Length: 327
Image (cartoon, rainbow, N blue to C red; front, top):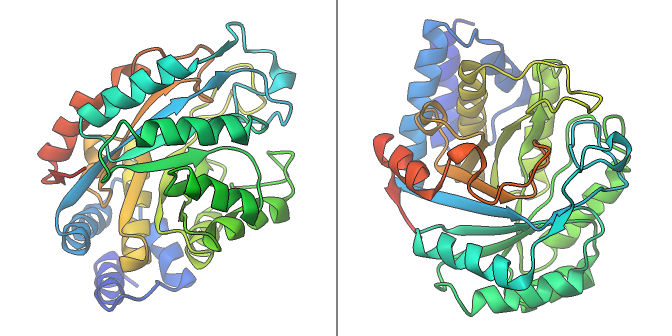
């Protein structure tokens, strides 16, 4: 099927509110990223994203709380204990955390995300959630990106002021990570059974991941109830087992973004991409990501916005792509 015909088929499915079938999604992902077909795909995805969201764009502000070795040692993560790359151990104290999230809120950030390594204290996180909830507008969504937990803990997170949890079944889970995929799924299902919303992206995508893998991952996440999705491209970190691999080209990241937007339709109204670029925000993504603190894609913590992609730059990028920033 020609690219233009494929795109029309995907748009029809999207407008009908249907989750795209795997075969068609793989075909969209097969389109050459630098082709005219990919341009058609990105333009169609951007138009559908504006329609689905009513033009609403959001900022996602994350803070990694603990720049510390994690014994899970994922093969792509700079914080893996086995890789011995953490040379500046740091845990952000509560006052620093509150300052960061107050800054995020004042800049109009909607998704406020606390990120930790696998075994960080849930009790501590719940205390922080309650404190942040009292500082920021009610419209802000407070999210956790942390370790595994059960339904009872999910309900505690919600009671503390959390509204969302980022947790995903990563590409090659159990091979490039030491996690049991079923354990990851159990946590995602605990989130789904609670008052919390589930955010889950296809990640971390590298050049070795086939289009079938990407399609299976995304459709599986949507079927697990992810309302917020998208993709994260792997940033190779020298010194990790996957540190010598290549990063995806910006055009490929944008093409995947567009394919996932059309595939998810209204099931995943908010699509995030990391790293965010002007190209992704005009290819179906409506969420720009700002990152601070402990960064699993870097060997030193970022006390300012990672790679200088701060709230101001992210907001300007949303505006350039035609989004109305909402909090």
